[in-house]
Length: 398
Image (cartoon, rainbow, N blue to C red; front, side):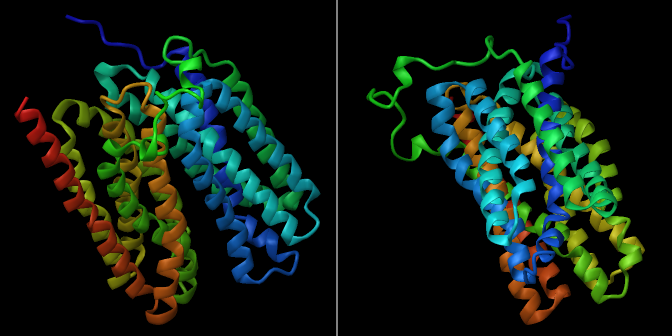
């Protein structure tokens, strides 16, 4: 019997911690940055821009990072943008007005997008292939733990020490990203930079291939629509709670979401490896819309728990499972472009979702918005069916 490949190697731990601390910075600051902006006299709209410009910067750098990773090497690009990420964190101490804060926030997003793309590429290339989905589930716990710890820790630090304390904690976390990525050995998996990848050579990817991986688009569109549902949950649940006079009841939302996510991701990966993608994906595509619809139809402690659990099993679990599908069978040379395609769709859904859904709230209220978010999430199911049916037909004809 073939011996099971190890998951928890030194490299895995280093990459895991690099991704964890990178995501921790995001989730520590995203819950308090808008509040910090209001201290400068910013309006609610400007405060929202301070938070959202980070995602916009990340999306831009993701789109260009695939080409950079291909040409100059995975670890080198990871280190460069992690240092940009750290430097931007340190610059928050110098922000004396909201304009400077927005500029720093944008640069911070640029560092985050390309750096997290590079870290994810290195991780997905280094995971054992025989238990790929299970290993992906364990690795994606790095983000799950950041989701669980970040908002709570960020709020606690901000309440106790203000913006200075928050930026110090974020800077230390960002520095730890650099340290753990520096300890990672990528020689065995990284194609590495070479003259053949320099821009002047004709063999470099051209057109859409120089930005995205077309093979990854169908599955990436699934996570895009699931991200709309996730955006509805995390962006509006506090405002929805206040409108219902249920602020106390809604405090359980994130702890439930995080707990279910931490438990489900490794289990989901094992199920995916053993029984295939469909057994896991189809139920999860249905669960999230049901949770959102229930929250809109009859808000209560029970439906809050159901919605948080459904979000964790929906977007949270699918993020890991669909990521495994996208990266399975992708060559290391095309892996940066696959990562760009997938995570850009995540960013687009989470970044654009609140704008679209916010407009619906203004015109029709929160329940209508959650019903629309449920419908948008459900679009992922037929998209997945079409994407996987095409792939299955291809394999049947081989």
